[in-house]
Image 1 (tube, rainbow, N blue to C red):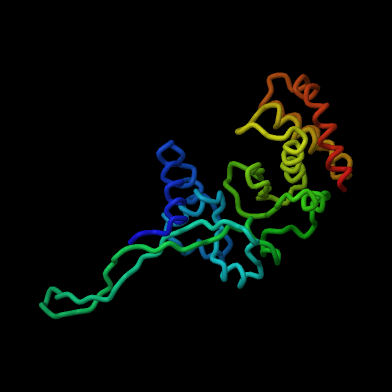
Image 2: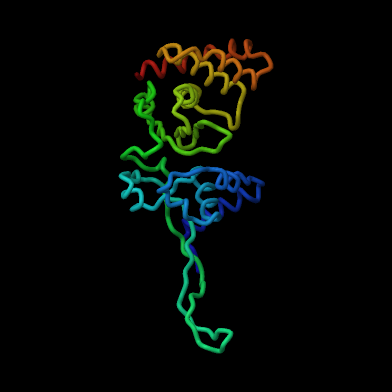
Length: 257
């Protein structure tokens, strides 16, 4: 059974990742937890892998499923695709020579689904914190999508420059500030380097420490120092080099507030 061009293109992208040795979709689909009402809890592992490989998220749902959850798929969003079996009723002889009906698999059909980041509307239970972080409105003004959702256990949050979106797996304000600083840094410099870059991580973490102090949310300097030390052999030098960009990032965020 031939898939649609869009569905086939999505599957080809997933296959290409696997050929390049990127097995993260498999490991994350196994390790991530989901809300009890998330449809993906009832999917096969292969469909969870397909969804995660295409969107970077596991909580993907159909158009009407998101509507039932009180959220609407944003106009212009691109769907990911999972596969559903197509069966037909047939007959066969059982071991006693008696004819019986059964369902025969004849192929698969593609089902479009959308990630949480592609939707807007009601807060998802268990995701959005009761106390929203400062500067969340700034993120919205800058066109940055922010969503709270289950994330892999190796991270508390992340920022995707390609989709200009922040995902948070914690209600900790410092994590939000860190990822927001990445998004602001992109706007200041025009682009970010891929991966965990020392300079970029230093800028984001030191900015978060300053914002924590500015909003009276506690002394975060010790945590920031340890984080930066993980990337830089000389954290003090790394911070000194980052200060000019940190100032620009802070100015953008606070001027937009």
